[in-house]
Image (cartoon, rainbow, N blue to C red; front, side):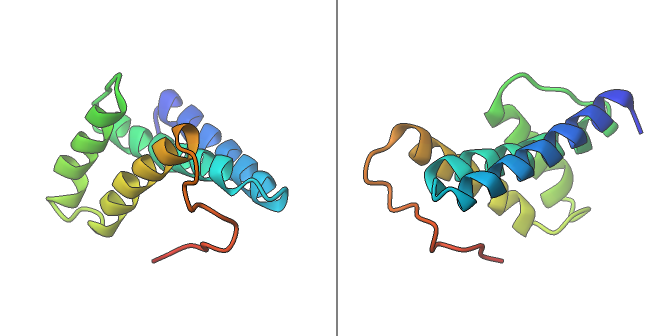
Amino acid sequence: MKEYSRKLLDKALDAIEAAEGLMDMGKAEFSAGRAYYAMFYIAEALLSEQGLEFSQHGQVIGAYGLHFAKTKKLDPKYHRWLVDGFDTRISGDYGVDTGIDNDMGWQT
């Protein structure tokens, strides 16, 4: 595994821990952002292992869809989760009355 990919996966673990801590504090809107970043860092690591690096969220999301979801190398539901996670993060970071709360739970 490339060093850069490993560092991204370490960041993903940190983001998951932060998301869990924020949920424990009742801060679901902010937890959603950290959960999205965990997925984002994992997507970046997977793409990095393919020799691909991007500088924008949309580029990472699109490339993940192209290289992993469309090819079915990974279940396409993970691409949907990444897209939905991005939308939820934007809503949580910038929206008011988002409807994001601690009772939402995880959907599979």
